[in-house]
Image (cartoon, rainbow over all chains, first blue to last red):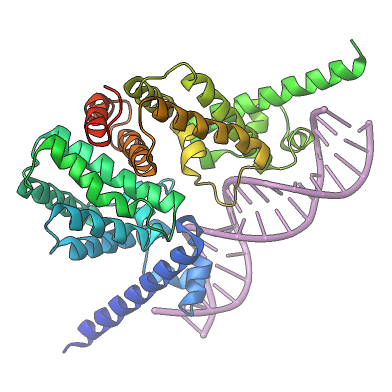
Length: 186
Length: 186
DNA sequence: GTCTATATTTGGATAGAC
DNA sequence: GTCTATCCAAATATAGAC
C-alpha cells in the first residue's frame, strides 16, 4: 500500500472520529449547541485544527446530514409493510431527536445541504414512494396525507411525550384509518 | 385622570410598540434573529433602553407568546365546524411561520413561557377539546390522532410548500378520513 | 497537521451620567 | 427613561510558527 493511501485512510478515520463526537455533542446539547471549541475538546484537539478536516462548520452539518440519511436508508431498507415502516420511522426519529431535527426539520439558520449530501435523502424519498406503491398507494393526494399523518405522529411524540409511546401506539389504528380511506392492500 | 395613570398608559403604549416591532423583526429575520440592538433601532431607541420595559430578552419572547395565543383564541373563537376549524388553524400558522414556531414548536433554547403567558395557551387547548367534543370526538386516542393529523398537514405545508396550498387543500378529504374512522357528526 | 495567538463579529446585559 | 460607554461571553475563522 502506498504512503499516500495510508495518509488518506488516516485522514478519513479522523474525520469519522470528529463526526462521531459531533453526534454525541448534538445529542447532549441540542443541534444548535454544536460549537467548534467543544467539539475540538471532545476529540482532543484545539478548535482551529478542525479546519484541517472541514472547511467550515456547515461542512460538518453537511457530512452529518449525509450520514443521517444513510443510516435512515439502512434502517428502512428491509421494512416493507405499512405499519412496521411507520413504526421504524417513528423509532428512528425518537431515538435521536437532534438527528430528526437535522434531517427533517431544517432549523439551522443558513444551512442548506449540498447536492452531494442531499443524494441519500432523495434516495430515501424514492424508497418511501416505492413502499407506498407496493401497498397500493399511488395518488399524489394519498401520499401527501400519508406523509403529513406519519410526520405529525412523530412530531407530537417527540414534542409532547418524549420517551413515552402515547402517539407511537396509535400507529396501527392511524394506518387502518388511512388505508380504509385511500385504499391499499389489507 | 391621575398623572400616574397617564404614565402607566404611556408605558403600556411603548411596550406594545416594542412588541409590534419585535413581530416585524422575527417575521423578517426568523425567530432566532431577534436581537435587542436591531429591535431598539427599529423603535428608535438604544438597546439598553429596552430594559426599562422588559427585564430580559426572554421577557419579550414571553409577552409575544402570550400575544400569539390571544390572537389564536380570537381567530378560532367563532369557528366551530371541523373542516373550517382545521383550515383556520392552517391559515393562522402559515400566515406567520415565525409565530407558529414560537407558539407550537418551542425551538428557542432556554425559553420556557411563564405561567401567566401560558394561560391563554391552556385556554386554547381547552377550546380545541370542546370543539372536538361538539363534533362527537371524545376518546383520547381520537383526539391525539386528530392533533397529529392537523399539525402534520400544517407542518408539511409550511416546510415543503410555503405560500402554496398543496396540503391545505387536502384538509376536507383528511377530515373525512378522520371522521369516517373515529365517528363524529356528519 | 497541530498549535498559539488573535481578529472579528455579535450577542445580552450593566453602570452611571443626565 | 434614555443615553453613552463598557463589560463579558461566546462563537467562527484566520495567520503564522513549529
